[in-house]
Structures are given as C-alpha cells and as structure tokens.
Image (tube, rainbow over all chains, first blue to last red; front, side, top):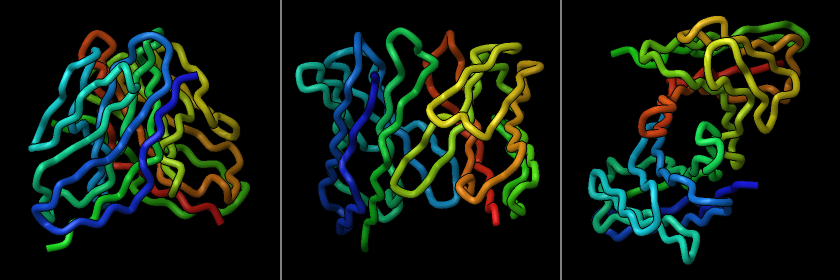
Length: 113
Length: 113
C-alpha cells in the first residue's frame, strides 16, 4: 500500500544554516505530495505541495521537488530562522482515492539563535 | 474565517466512560477525517467520510465510531475509553474538487486514566 518515510529527528540547526529533511514514498500510480508544518500547540497547516513529477513546490523559502525516479520529495531551505522551529510532515494523497492521505512520522526541527 | 472547530480542547476521562469529540467545519468541504497523533507515530487515520451520509475506516478504527449526518459536522465517539486512546485528536477536511489540501483543526487532547 501507499506509504511515506521521512528522516527521524530531531534536527537541530543554527540560524541561517541550510536545511534538508528527506522524504521518500511508496505509491502506485501518480500521487500528489505535500509538506505540512505543525507549530507548537497548533494543528497542521499546508506548507507546499506538488501534484506531478518534476513539479517544484515552494513557500516561505522552503522548496521540494517531486522526483518520480527516486520516489522522493525532500524539503529544503537555504537559510533557516528560529521561527521555522516546528514539526514537519511529509504526506501523499492516493492516486486512486485522492481523499486518502498518508503521513510520515514527522521531523522536529529546532533552530537555535 | 473559522475553518474547522474542535471541542473540547482538552479532556481527562476515566477508563470505561464514553466521550464524543466534536468537529464542525464552515468551508462546505465534502471530505472529513479524524486522525490521532502519537509521539513517534505521526498521524494515523481513524475514520473518514467522503461525503455526508457515508463513512469509512482508516488505519486504526477499533474503539471509535463516527457519523456524518450533514456536511458540516463529523463527531468522533469513544464508546468505552481505554488508556491506549490517550492521544491528541485532529479533525480535518478537504475539498475533493479542489487542491486536495487538508485543513486541520487545533486538536483535542484526550487523557484516559
């Protein structure tokens, strides 16, 4: 079945460092891929998405490219800020049932001043 | 814009008691979901509903029931709570005809003693 695997955390970085959070997926067909962010005490909110191969999603300085050949959707940011400290979830929606969403286990990011 | 409203925000419950977590959305989304979030396990789907009048089982449905009498409301009921149901519960919705993005509530923290 469909699934998402993302790197375990926590990830601790200094402000202005480069961020990569790895995400790989298993799916039949052509799923849509998402990154969600959860700030402390809040629900998840969409950070970015990509709906087909080679698409690049971007928002707030974060980027991720849908790589079908490597079944990956790694999250990157060139210069993190303290305000980026949160838990990041990779997710996909099923090709044949696009109302089914599958989440990774989440990666906690701590950014120190 | 309210989006998704969950209640209660937090609850402590004795084992064996019943409990209903409420979820209301004002976006007229067709699909609604209940997830539980546990440390290290990410989000796991409990039940979902593709449209009013229909429901389906997710990954971890045992011990939970849902109903979808109308588009806006999607309550989650624990008939006889057990300590393993201690978790943070998130309600979400999505527009099947739109972007596929999930919109989340703020969560309900439930502790079963």
